[in-house]
Structures are given as C-alpha cells and as structure tokens.
Length: 368
Image (cartoon, rainbow, N blue to C red; front, side):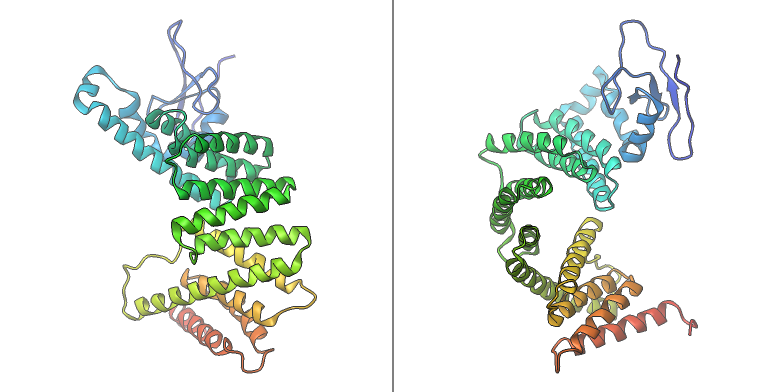
C-alpha cells in the first residue's frame, strides 16, 4: 500500500518517492527502505510519516536546508567548495546537533534527543572516522537519552562502545574520561551495582579535577553523585558529609555569581550572560533540590544545612528571573536560619528576599 503524504503545521511536507528500479533510499532514523521524501530539502528520506515527524521535531527542522549543499554534491560543487569546505559544514552540523540534544536532555525530552544524537554520531563518524575519540560525546548523548527512557541494555551497549574507543585512544583528554566515567557511574547506579558506581564516580572526580580543578563545580557534581550512592547503600553519615561539602561549595559559587549579577543590574549592563545555560540550570536545580529533600527528610534535621541549600536555590532562581520560586526557596531558607540564634545567613537571606520583592514590584508596578 502506498504511503500518503502528510502536511502538518509543525513539519515540512513529505511526498511519496518515485524512484527508478534499482535505486534505493534509506530512512534517516532507522536505515530501512524509504518511501517518503522531505519536500523542503529533497535530500532526506523516511520509511513512514511517524519517523519523519520524529526527526522533524528532534533535529531536522534546525538543519533541513543545511543538508542540501552537503547531500547534493556534484562534481562541480566539489571542485568549487572542495572537501575541506564540506567537512567544515559537517562540523557545524555536529555542533548544532550536539547543542540541540543537550538542551532536549535537560528538558527531559528523551525521545526527541535520539534523532539529534544519532545524526551527530553519523556525521562525526563521517568526518573523523568510525573508531575515533571525537565520536564519544555522541555516544554519551545517546546513552543519556536511553538512560532517561529506561533502555538500560542499549545504554550498556553504547557505553561499552565509547569505553572501547577511549581505551584505544591514548591521546584522549581528561574531559572525555570524566564524562565517560560519570555516565558509567550513573548506569551502574541504575542497575544496582553500587560498588562499581562508586569506583566510576571516583574516577569521574579524578579526571574532572585534572581538567577543571579540584575546586571546580564540575568536579563537585561527582561528589554529589557519589553521595547519592552512599545514601542508596544506607551509609547516611557519609552521604550527609558529602552533601554538606557540595552545598558549601555551591553556596560560595552562587554568592559570587549573585554579587556580579547585582553589580551588572545596578550598572544597567544588559550585555552580561545568564548565570547558567539551560542544561546546567536544570542540573543544578535537581542537585540542590535533592540535597534539600535529603536533609528535610532526615529525622535529625540540620537547620543550618537546610538554610544553606535553600538559600542557594533562592539565589539561583533570582538570577534566572523566576521571582516566585526565589521567594519560595528564600522563605524556606529564612525559616531554617531563624531556628539558629545569630545565624550568619539570616541577614543575607533577608536581604535577598527584599531584593526579590523590589524586583517583583518593578516588574509589576501597580499590582499592590
């Protein structure tokens, strides 16, 4: 039965293919025989409308026209642009796909990550070769997406491939090692192999500290993940101690960011960058919330720790412009700090809450 073309407000048109005998096109997503063609670029093909829709939402909308000069290579175009120019264009596609996949990962849109990460891997292999360390980031993106979907067997296969490539690449840098061990640690945590998870997170911390420094927030995420494993093992004192160190580090970091942010606002400097990218903001938010809930659920609550972590959350949301969330976290922090006589965070928390309220008033004049 012939597939029917479909038009949607969120996709490009697709047409049935009329190919000469002996000519075959493959589906962009599954590499099976294609029966449909994107009508915008005319160089991308699909087995059915479902895969076309998935690819459009996942990545094709962003790169549709960028594929045309790469996939419509003629002898003339190759002479004009040359292989180096084509490789450069493919490099740009890799960067775009990686950015899209990372942003979708941070939003929890795991199904939508897959087309971007798959194309990133194929393009990377085409540019760098099939067994090179440059492909590892794409393997890790695919692994993280499948982790979110619960496809642990697929995660194991992808990470095994990435690990094999890294082992065969002595020039591989610390950053790649750190990301690989972090992903392996998460996999072993999900499968319940907690001792192996701790080993990988220890390696993650080592390589992250070599790349970014022992005091880096990137390194401290490894300590946070290790604390979660100790909590799963029931080793609560160790988990609590690690969470305390992570919270202290993040509080110092957030305080410095807040000082810079306030100075920029006071100077009416609109050129300063947001404190975090979307992916990092989600990661920091989840990390701080996990530590806050851990302490709040502890029978012997540490009010100082609750105040510290909630203050971190309040500072982050204030800098991101979400004043409602900043007020909620700030109120939690203030209540906890006021349980401790002369606590040194009470005044900064009160100052932040006043700042949030004044910003709310400026944003909504006449709302009182």
